[in-house]
Image 1 (cartoon, rainbow, N blue to C red):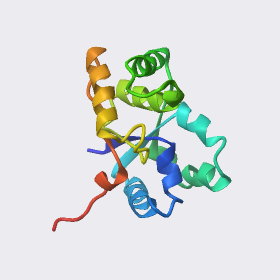
Image 2: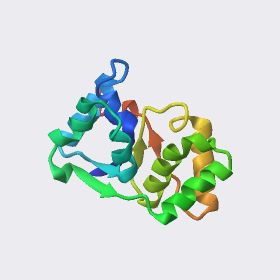
Image 3: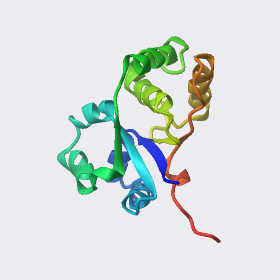
Length: 154
């Protein structure tokens, strides 16, 4: 079964970042090989508007069937605001909360991010999932690309 991986903007930027390029390119190789589907949101698209051209153009190199598109709905906005209200993160991290909420509501298999401060952080993950459970949603798997690439059968 093909896994659905919600990606935030850090994944696209990571493709060009020396510290993250190896694992990010390996994740994109899985996309190219049709092992995974990237779930993209309108929040990601909005964030990409201010990115350098090569970052904005990266996804254009892949076929449309590689992606599923989802939107920030009123339900997702409410859930994102709950993360802020519960002090999982501060109000300046609303875009990060919207990514988490959209991924949660759309029941993706995993959310991938290189954002260790506000997303891929054990304390934050527990906080997001505590709110998810309190609000009647499933727990969301949140990982960095190192945990999502194949390492062989050694």
